[in-house]
Image (tube, rainbow over all chains, first blue to last red; front, side, top):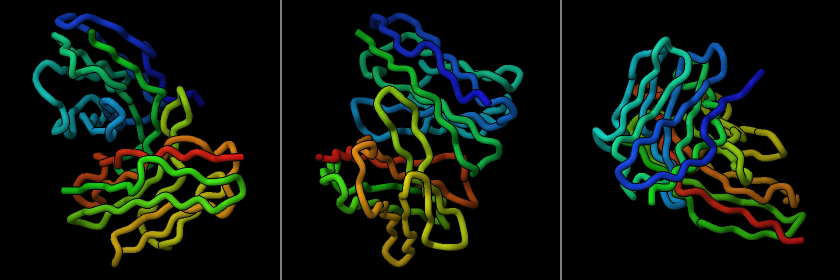
Length: 113
Length: 115
């Protein structure tokens, strides 16, 4: 069974540019989560999808971040325009049902210069 | 609201020695508790979890943790460290009844194992 995959693994962009991160969850997992770790600090929750619906987006930092999950399969997280403080590692996770074990992807390391 | 405190950002032990990584949490409702491990250039991997039932939880790679409600702790232990245990470890909590999908993580503890 394939695990959670994320693309790209690394991205370096300039301040003001746009970046789109993609996450493919484990097949059949209705729940998809985005987290972010900035500068070696704690991993922070961004949002939670159940199928294509946003269950909880309380962790999204501001309106420069847009997450979508059309069709309830893969998800994208767009940052537009990127700022220096957006640099960090963005993790995606999926689970079969809410509260169950979350399976994490390897993360996308975003560097904004 | 929920929070996690991991005591010690870096822990160093000798191979064969006891591993003890400390985690204290706060939660307004009964918690789900997790320990994850992250090896370099990899995603987080679940070591073990507590949801309900037995408070001593056994996980993979010989790790275990005990949920102590009175102490609001969920410390991770392993009797004998192996070189392959060197990694970063994260404790996490979620609220069982109200928002089980949202996990709150600690800052992480980097474990170094000396030969």
